[in-house]
Length: 324
Ligand SMILES: NC(=O)c1ccc[n+]([C@@H]2O[C@H](COP(=O)([O-])OP(=O)(O)OC[C@H]3O[C@@H](n4cnc5c(N)ncnc54)[C@H](OP(=O)(O)O)[C@@H]3O)[C@@H](O)[C@H]2O)c1
Figure 1: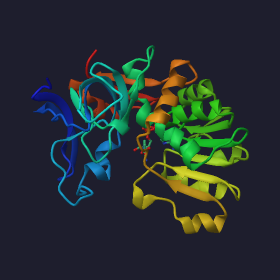
Figure 2 (figure 1 turned 90 degrees about the vertical axis):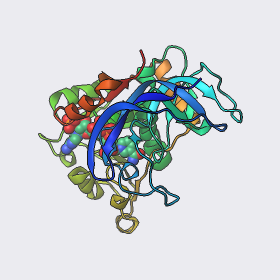
Figure 3 (figure 1 turned 120 degrees about the vertical axis):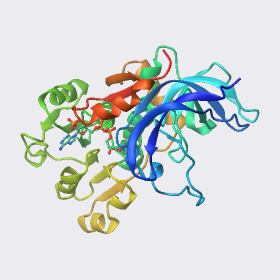
């Protein structure tokens, strides 16, 4: 039987704008006929999450107010604890991982409510700590490179922020697809990490300008924004593709500006896709993708994870462990 109350991590005051993270007891999600409850084992963190519009002041898509608390952590791994009567494909006890829609509560909690189109099976040999990093970290990279940039074998992609949570996956996925990869990073250790992951060249942006050393590129995948994104417009040749995930919808690249330069430019939000997650986790199982874990914290230390995140360089993914 599902628990009545549970430990969870939430945003303290999304409406008032105090984005600090709290951990405490809250009501467990109710079982629903069309979905599953998952006993969460691990959750991937995205440190920008408390500032996302979906977690902040926006009303829900139907115009109603978002119910509090707003639980964080939309990518997760765990085991099915309840399977609704109108679901199929997964039974109680099955190991799963997935991505919960950003308008609903996340999974930094003992129990998470998920829908069938949001989860995939976690294969033997892949840990929940590794699997929980894939539905935002790796799936975002996959959709950027293939669904939006249409990266092809033999092309060159410049990845801004190559040592970050999304960037470290993007390097490996692009290499595996037969592309040449150049990455921008901050710091010597980040240069070494990107080279080890398969980048041909890693550019420390504090030392060199990417325009001077990257060579010709077909695609720019930006995870940093600001100046790096702005300079990428002029750097791409006609026919080039620019994909960014930084910022919010209102920061999305202008189609008019792209058309004037003869390039394509896109901003998007990662969407759950069980088929793509299955392909990605198979690559982890057979060693073609190596998950970079920066740090692990227990759920009870979620506030500390967020406080420390801004004071240190980030290399790969930070994970909250909910159950060992
Ligand atoms: N739209 C979507 O669907 C989607 C999905 C996932 C993430 N995102 C967004 O994408 C962004 C990246 O996410 P993430 O989880 O990968 O973040 P992350 O782990 O913090 O990675 C960002 C990386 O960029 C590096 N960086 C920062 N400034 C740089 C510069 N000037 N030159 C080179 N590298 C630089 C950072 O290095 P240091 O740590 O050393 O500063 C870090 O390694 C966030 O804004 C996040 O909200 C969007």
